[in-house]
Length: 222
Image (cartoon, rainbow, N blue to C red; front, side, top):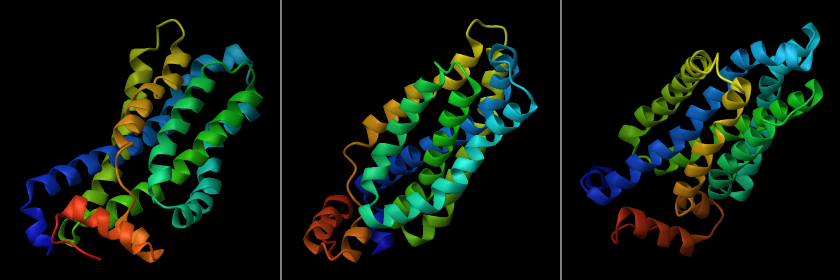
């Protein structure tokens, strides 16, 4: 069955696009985690950050990941894959825009904590979504691509930090630029269907069968 699916151009296109769209937020995850380092160089005098707040803000996203990962991973199993798939990049965009207007250490810490929770929700959600559509012989490669995108995002955060170092409003560019690709991702993801595996597990068999036929072809069934 899976070897036959690989021969269908429509399915290959669907799968390749899905991998890119899932990897997109992983790229942003890595960027958001890395960009705070260069941003703090400019924010330290502006917000009069002491050593406590430098450490707290620098680690806020990691704390958020620790909180958000298990909570939203659990919720993803309850509410499905599609809602987080669209909501996560929208939340990233909103919080990235908010981070451009912080005026105190406390505000920046709160925004970074929330961003960390979004990042923590992203990886289990997109990994489950992608793996539930992937043929077994490509699943490991495709999940591996998500990790590569995360690392590329962290590298990109440092590169952008270097590029904008001497620009006006450099820290705002660093922290807010992710809103643009995040909103594009949310738009591109809007028409992707719910995971048929999740629908089947919830006994929504008619919906699962309809998605299977749309994605895999008319011969597919629950």
